[in-house]
Image 1 (tube, rainbow, N blue to C red):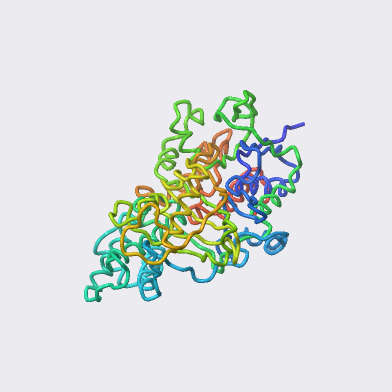
Image 2: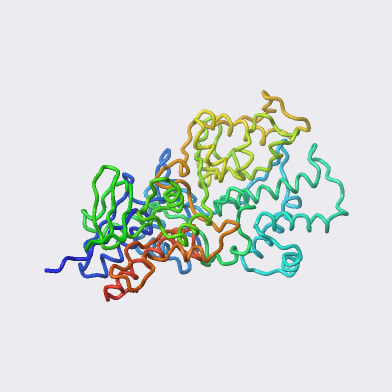
Length: 509
């Protein structure tokens, strides 16, 4: 009796479980299928948790557009959208308009915020392919390598057109230009969390227009994002998914009937005809830099060059439980406008990493749990800090912002009347987790959209090889137009499953 082709999928996240689900349900038991996961849970960068009775997401949070999204389709199919037995993050959608506070306790009105908000939105719309004549001509005239440089040139153009603005009054030592730049920086900080680029000057300008969004609203999942993962895994026999199986090395192109040999850290190994690698771009970057290397023989240079060029950043979420000395409705959803970290006007006890976040909001209306997002260096700093250090810093920052306006630099002990405190924190640690080493990919300056296509190419490249399709690659960082998203990971899992189904003359859809 002929042996079944053995397929091993490395990683039980969205891409890996989607591929496994597709292969198992479409092949009529043709394959011997295994999913090996280095962690002790399934889901990868999807990880639903709980914090003081509220359902929260430590990783993937949003369905980015509901029209055409396979994630939304599954969530509807399994009644996961509104079927929660407990409050969940953003269950009432995007909150009402936040209160925008500039350092020094100055609340900013719409006339101060809206021109900068509109400017930033128009600039980003243009980079994403929605052309506006002013920015089109500016782009051609000045040339741009990065999103960061384009945005700052746009701000300069705005200032050149507003030279006759009257002097700013009523905002202490903030000048109009300093305040407008700080508002602009607030929107830049939010954009960094969307892209995972720690610095927008490292985010490629030309490739931004290739990124595609689904139309429709952005929503969260009442039963948790993990319900999607559990659904995908539910059809698989119990012995298919193997947890706590950390891969040490992948040998491929061996002279054997099963040409791939996967070695695990515990000394065991498994032979396979095909392996679908769904590990993060961060793990691949580390795997090609280590002396021993994750692959033997090493990946070809066209593949390692793409891995090296593409960007991969860290985004972390910080949840904070409000102290009972304040009712939740007393602390509004905040947009925070800060002086630069090197400014003499800054409050000395607001640390640099707090100055690089833009918002602090309840996770739903009148919730006692608040959320801030961090990207880049401050996201890594957040992982290093103790809970007490984080609570002290956030308490100082919020109390300072919500105090009565003050024109002078606050002393270390000044709270100026308003005090708020937090009692506990929950934070993600994607940067230091060896199974991920970050959050999601972006197109860095020096790379391009074609690098995602290169990431997706299977090995060996010779289509006439006697053992084709030994190593296949899936994951968000292998999708050219939907990178950084769960639906991009889903599409990549379907793509690689179909590649194998078609190879074995099964029907792939």
